[in-house]
Amino acid sequence: MELLGTFAVIALLSFYGLYKAVRIVAEETADEVESDGHHMDLDIRKIKKLIAVKVLLTCMFVGDIVLLHFWYKQGDPDAPMVDAPLTIWIEFIAILVLIFVLASAMDKIDKEFEKLVPLPKDTDDEFRLDKKKVRHYMELLKSFSRNAIQISLVGNGNVPLTAGCSKLGGRPDVADDFQWPLDNSGYPLSLLLQIDCADLAFLDREGLLPTSGQLYFFYELSEMRRDGKKNSVRVIYNDKPSSQLHPLDYPVNLGKHYQLQECRLQFSQRTSFPCLKEVGHLAHKRVKTKDNIELEVASDRLEEKYWTGSEGIGNMLGYAFLIEKPIVKDLSDHVLLLQLDSSEYWEEDDKTPHELQFGNGGCIYFYIKREDLLARRFDSIKFALQCF
Image (tube, rainbow, N blue to C red; front, side, top):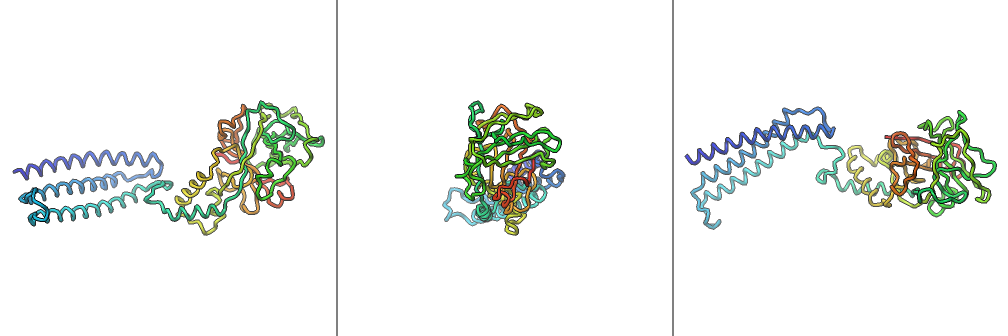
């Protein structure tokens, strides 16, 4: 009677636990996976069956151990193990066999469950991550590293600036023969950046940029053409001494909203790595499509290791942070002359009273052929605006 009563209680509790567990766990699993957007068409019935089998196996395992204990209870539990009767050894071996069978069954069910509810592709699961591949891709990305120049703002724009200095916005400091650039409709472009090339000389390891003079970056901000066509983008190089420069007044038809408040720039060196959208082109067959997780983790770890502590407002040289597809096909033939980010990504110290937005929180990119840059020809710029 004692054995039957115990078995009945275990059976009732097992079936009640099975019912509740299957219902709750299946619903929560479906909700969690669907909310993450990894698998929107789930077979709920199959999920319930798999969970039911797992719970039932666990209950059977506990029940079998209890039954074994009652069946062989004539053994003296206080006796030393070496003096224990044969029945206790049989019970011990039987429990080990049950544990092995349960573990094997659970492993097969887990594999079926993963097929039904796949893990997110971007998970950084140490048990799924091939650490050897991560190290391999870190070394591969490091082999493509390039020196970049990070651009940051200094102060809040209230300090008077000297003629020809590096700055964001304001009026360009130019010589007498300078003409304010216009688009094809006759509308004036806005000055984005004026850069004193002498500030870049000690940061440009390859010697690509001019070591003297000024670089001016202009862009038509009212329409913000994504491709820069119809003369809506202009890069101009001036090699005249600062003593011949003076601020040029704004055109009368350039609205105040497109007259960016000037603020001093400063530059620092950083190591840049190709973004994931460009790695395949650079590495050719050395990157496998199925290794997306390892490649992404390797890229994140390198960025974290070489982070300078500030994002700045943009970069010159190095690699661009691309939001959409690559802008140029051959990175060995083209140089990133400038990437400028929307002001919402600038550091708090880099904020100015003027908010600069490129589309929906995007970035603008200026590429130039290496040979044109070395020849100081800036009339064939490859421009793009990308946004989220």
